[in-house]
Length: 223
Length: 337
Image (cartoon, rainbow over all chains, first blue to last red):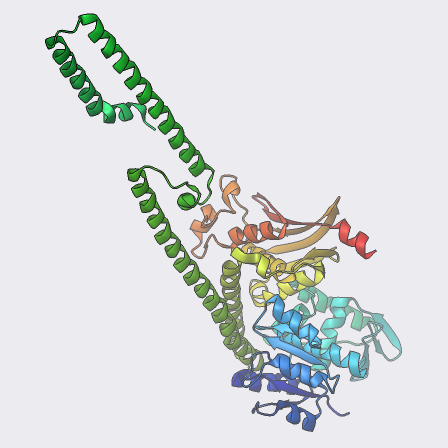
């Protein structure tokens, strides 16, 4: 599958590289604009699926770049800026920006916004089923299947398994798990996580998956 | 006008009059006038003189009372000379011009300070926008590179971002009208965003957050409400007990939507309760902890006041509940519907 191409127009060098790292890590093809002399021709050459645009840029403002892009393309544009006045937000919407995110942003929210925009505009099919050692996690029906027997999962349990399946074979620390759940608006504390893990283990055992989630002492869980 | 003092000021004139009367009487007596006619002249003199003096006093008193009343009605009292009539008397005019000069210098002074403040505010806002770039960069660096201390650092960054926001809103709270716009917004989204703003703080202290029944639409400004919620969450964590739980839920009451932020923290003592919204008030709880500034709730109250949101606080030994009540605007629904 061809990765979606994202173009970053941002003048802070550290943010450039780190954002690139983050997005590349999330499976996108990323191009960073380092010279702002000809943003439009650079953009035309790269043909991104989505643009992350800062408002304060050298030479010209993100607003004028946005309106020029809009004159020939409908590519989704996310404004990312530290100016959070209503005028800026209004301007960005009027000029055709698709989203407006203020710094300092939460990476989880930025990634979610990118994913949902791409999904809306390009109808990207997202993974809905995950498979690991014969067990299949169905995201849409919120269940797990093994050898023909199925178990229903609650929201928390589904998200925990989703994270574990995504990082199958690697060790996931409890902190990372809790982070991921919080990013998905499930606010569990340490105890609740243990309770959920135990419940998942019971459910897994009931469909014949024993010791599917292994505990790594002092490190976390792994599939 | 002090009447006693007025007459005291007139004393030399009165004495002069009496001396003149005495001199005239002696002279008239010496040239052979009868006592009767002298007494008549003196009587007439005293009558005319007293009448004119008393009427002058009444007139003056009225004039002064008018000025005093004028000054009382003014909110900006230094503007008095603008409303005064130019006095006719030469000595009064001197005072009038002195007042004018004082007013002018005052106005210049105020204008200079106003300009300075506006400049400073603009600088602060700009600075805050600038500082957000390095904060974002640090955050991204932390999230991309996991080290044992990264979580601690992220929690500190969260704190930095929060103090920065606080400064921004403090600077803005004077002129809210310039920077808010009321939209129909989803309360649930704001609550989730506010929790996300404090993710590392809350997970660090292993807080259980329970959000329920918040899925309602309100009319307000998203940024401001989020800021207020942030302050409330931070307070709950600051004054926590062993195992902190925060419950956030909403309820429709007649013509308003009430958002409850409830914690099981140490609570606020009844003595302190009436003063928690005062600027700089830290109370018993604040004295026990070092980092109370007395700004958070003050700012919340102020912002709520500007946005027309009700802010109430109930507290006991088993925790504190803060209630934000958003008025429901039926008119907008009628227009839209």
